[in-house]
Length: 415
Image (cartoon, rainbow, N blue to C red; front, side, top):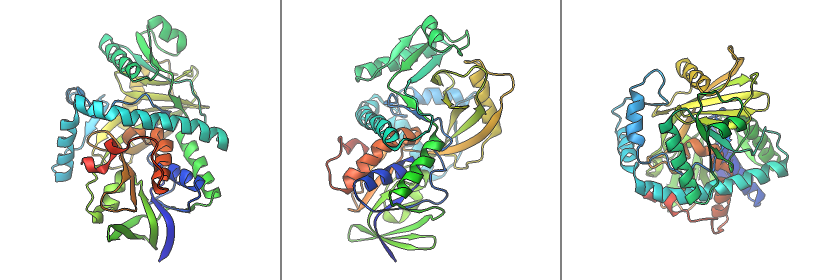
C-alpha cells in the first residue's frame, strides 16, 4: 500500500492542470492514467480557448436542430448511438428536459466565471513557463453563409454583450477584410476577441513535462480499477499493479469517471460525445484566425505550420477510431467557407471523446458522500478551455481556500 497526499485520476487537460496548481500550492501529487498522460481525448481537438462559449450545450432549439441534422446522414454535424441501455436513455431524457431557457440562465454565470478564470490562467501559465505551443490571442472568428445562420450568430453576440463579454458583428465587407481566406459565399461573421488558440497536443506535452519537473509522480498505463470508501472518505484506490492510500482524491477521468467511481454510489451522468479532427500541412492560403463555420459546426485552427479542422458530435459513441466518412465530411464543409488547396497534405486524422453531462455543465466540487473526493469531470467540448480554471479551483478546494466563484451550480448534487 502506497500512502500519497493527493491522488489524481486522469491525465488529460483537467487532471494535468489540477496537478500543476496543486504542486504550485505546495502539495504532493500522484497522477494515474489508464493510457499515456497528456496524449488522449484532448490532444487532437480544435485547440480553441473559448470563454465566449457561455451557453450550455443543453439550450432551447437544440432538439429541433438535432432532429433536422439526423435527416442528413451524409453531412450532419450531429449523431447519436442507438441503444436501449437504461443509463443512456435516462441521460437522453435528462438532456431533452434540460434544453430550456432556465438551464441557460443557470448555466451562463458559472461557465462565464470559469472561462474567464481559465483564459487568464492560460496567459499567465504560458508566459511564466515559456511554453512554445502556437498560442495566439487574436480571438475566434465565426463565419456564416446563410441569413438564418448569421441571424443566430448575431443573437449569440447579443447574449455575450449582455453578459459583459466581447463580440463584434461583421458584415460581408468587414469579414472578408479580416479573413482573406473566406470564400465569396461567406456573408458575415462574429469576432469573439476574448478567445485564443494553441496546439493542444504540444501544450499538454509541455504541461506533462513541467508537472514531472515540479515533482509529480506520474503513472501512465495505470488504470484505477476500484475506489473503496469507509466513514465518508475514500480509503483506498486500487490500480492495475498497486494500491494507494490517499489523503485526497481528484476524479478527473473524463468519460471514464462513472466507471472509475462505480463502487461509490455516486450519480455521475456522463456520456461520451465523440468528435473528429483532420490536421494538414499549412495550405497556400493560411487563415489568419481561428475559425468556426457557423452552419456546419466545424472549427478550424492555425497551429504554426499546420492547420486543424475539427467537427462532429456523436452522443454515446465510445470508440476512438477515426471514421473516414466524417473526416471527409469535415473537409467538404471547410471547402464551403475558405480557400483550400485542391489536394491537402494530411498529417493526422483523430477521434476523441468529450465527457458530457445532460445539462451541458461540468461537475466540479466535493462529493457530498466523501469528504476527501473532489470531482472534476463532465467538461464536454470545453475540457481544454476550462482546464486551467478548473485546476485552480481544485487546488483551492484541496487547500480549504474559498473558491474563486460560487460552485453550487456545478455541484454533483444537482443530479
